[in-house]
Length: 237
Image 1 (cartoon, one colour):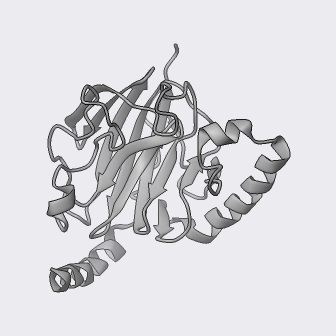
Image 2: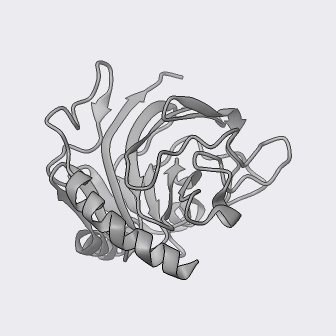
């Protein structure tokens, strides 16, 4: 298995080098949406605070001075490992997650993403994990259910797995369309409905509902990652 993965990784290196760039039409939001990524730099983004302040519950208890000090360190970590290159947000596989500088409540969100073999990532909604991203092909024993599920859900009535595998082959761009209203999340992956109006559980405080607002995070698990075309429309409550 390891030799197969090494061969596949080597073969895909050329693919990623050729396709990890944006087209002229990329990072241009559709009507009614705003681009969270401008295609040029990381304006509007910040680094994830180090534990224990990676938790919204702990951030709410921290003093402004402690938060400011922690954010300065986190932004240094962000600049070291997250870059805007050729119209794409690129993560080098080290450091912590990338977060929106602004908090959001109810919204519709489009995100294009791409991973490498054995890649593992996800999107935190309102600072809460997560809409899952991972490789269902290279490691099918672990990830055969595909991407898009609400991975950290635990209650039987709130499914954690997507309804189908809709991932494109590794090395190709995938598109999420995510709608979050209240506690409920709907996810389309590459045009296929994979999560249908499911409650996102509060990973940080299991006895409470998910927070009413919070940052969106591009999560990593130590793999190179690629994002572009991140568009959001806030929905009135």
